[in-house]
Length: 244
Length: 261
Image (cartoon, rainbow over all chains, first blue to last red; front, side, top):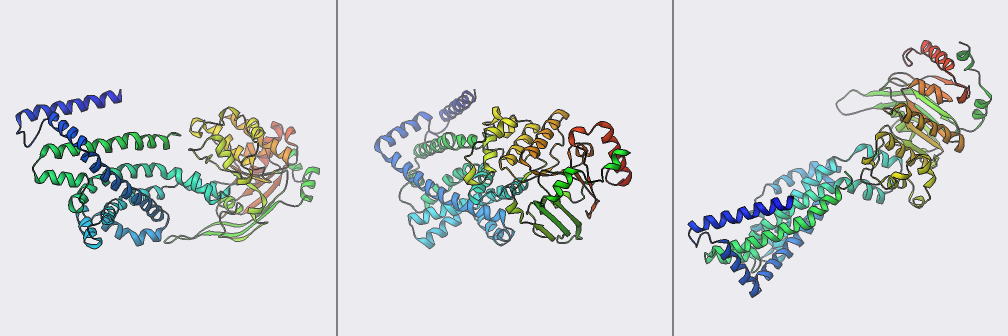
């Protein structure tokens, strides 16, 4: 039923697009069929797979870095008042720095390199993860803490059975919001300083004013990210909530 | 009032217990909570008692009197007090049943009970414990699927699986229906008889305490101090209604602040 509803809304969206494109200039809003023809051509040439693959790899690496550092930082902030007082202001500063500024500075300081690109994406995402995890670490159940101390849970038991299960919903929330943030930023980073990837391709076709190609790349990449959310992150979410 | 008069003469059983070395001796001279920007609150002053094997001790006092504070100190959770708990509570083998079940909702009933055990004993056979508590069909379920009464049983199973020498119960039968409460009470009494466990139970329910306790510890309002230690020497099976009523009336007369008529 939920799947049917999704498919219906998608079909309505496509029909709307097709309808509007009839009246619009072909150069500014191509028809869905033209976009899909481009996607097919680009896939056959191998460019599509290469660019999407490169971008996905960048999203993946920076996502893993930002998640692991952000989770550790967030737990530290939530558990220690001192760490929270010391790091709250820098965190707010980074949280409110535009992605563009972080990216430009990363390229200036680290050169137009792969490292700079990944660092830029990771730094953009990290404060979000940390803030979500801080909420999780602040809300730990004091009753369970007391129980764990009374029953003398060792450190490993406490982490695996008391701490992590309470943080898991926050981790999944951070991952889901983080992955969409990461892929939006990674395109800007590629546009500014990388010779490949979806962001580079979109910029290239933008200079040719090839709207069909721009929309084609966006559609493919969006579909990939939606698939990751639906096939990996949502089942993960359901798994950590199974006991409720 | 004959029953009430007799209760201060030590019976044979009580003497035997008195001869046995105490498992745990608690002496709290003073416990003060100090928080920034608030007046310090004195929670406990001069509260001392011992726990002996095969004895049920009930701690009774007005709410907010510092009973939970006393339990936290006894469990070794709060080292910030004047006094001493001997021997070190970590070495005695104390298990605790909290007022709310405090189970890990994301672990099954079986895992909850096993996780309460030290790592090297987690694999032990627990069939007996689950069977006694009527939890066998629920072993693979999550706590959320159980009623409060059943969750309390799981909490009790977790404590009993440790085979503790001292079992501490903080109002364990509150908000259970009479049948469920009576069933759990019987289990606790049986444990004392079989394993010679020492039980310390905090309760508001004077009737319940009079039914099962060997000794009542009456505690004053904050700061908590010991008003009286009242031994109940009539065997548990022979405490009929007239004994319970007479004892209660006597205690209510002498400690009107603690025990209502």
